[in-house]
Length: 437
Image 1 (cartoon, one colour):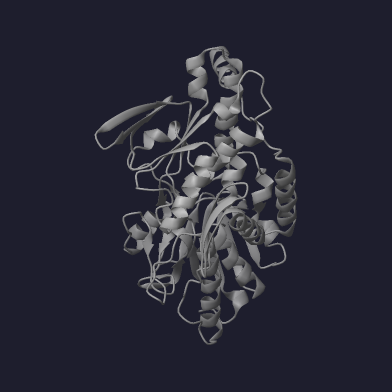
Image 2 (image 1 turned 90 degrees about the horizontal axis):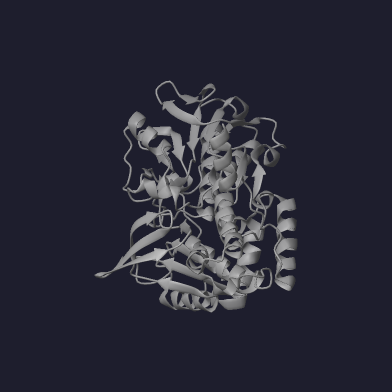
């Protein structure tokens, strides 16, 4: 180890929850830190669905890492993609060069998983990045706009049918938000269509929505969804997806759902950097591509390399597998920073990592949410209010907290949302440009 924090170079790959919190903690203690991310901003992923459905703007949930870290002169942010590592030489390779490190922290997260059917990505976007959220927003609001234009009843039914695949928290929140749009927010905004006639279908292979939640909360969530006009199709598997259909199977019954809007919320897989680490260090990956790490988040045989956040598969001091949630990622980032500081300075090391679980929550719509909290289970208005304050508090920047609070308050009392913009060149315009080029 380097003799002082200022001489110890920590390279962090990934500027999400885990990476950013590790960088902040290390920056406060004077470490020389280089943070790499292919995008130059930290994204509050739990609220991505609100960008996709128009409740929030991109700037409300994203902020440049260098703005968050501006107070720490020893911390440098680089917008670049890391693609390889040499553990023996302690060199990280990225698209614009190489970096020597004393300690490497990898926090590259997860990506969508289509279970071997990657061709579905073209028709069913997932929700992990701002680009995905904007793509979803374009698809959702374009469908309503096109339905207003057409006189073809069959096409109108397709356009007003929305299929969300996967009824975990993301899928439930997406379906609920679309239901609220159709049945409440936009009900008086069109002349040729009635948005409340939209069909929102939530497809789930398990027996119920929110499979990991207690039964009472699953039932409450399903009731909230149905109140917003969402049709829940459980024990239903997706067999195929195309540009205008989803083919499903339930038992021996097959059905083809005609739709122009398909949204994917069914699965994730660890990012590619996990495979790179496995190739270079021999570390094991689980079935989801996550890196199996030691109880202190380090790689077996490589105490100078840590994997934190969703990319790592970690069992904490209580024997519990740490979930892939934002609070867990933040706690791991801070823990690794503290552990590294104790190594460098010779201080007493922190206790083995133990995830502090304050519970999980899912919001379905205005005044509709469910929460499995540490000491109680909550539903309805109180759960929704708790969810709102928890998420506002978790935002990194004070200005973001204020903007989100104001927008949610405005929406609560007026039912108006301000970002239903359909961006990007229309399909026909792109076709005409291609023909003329």
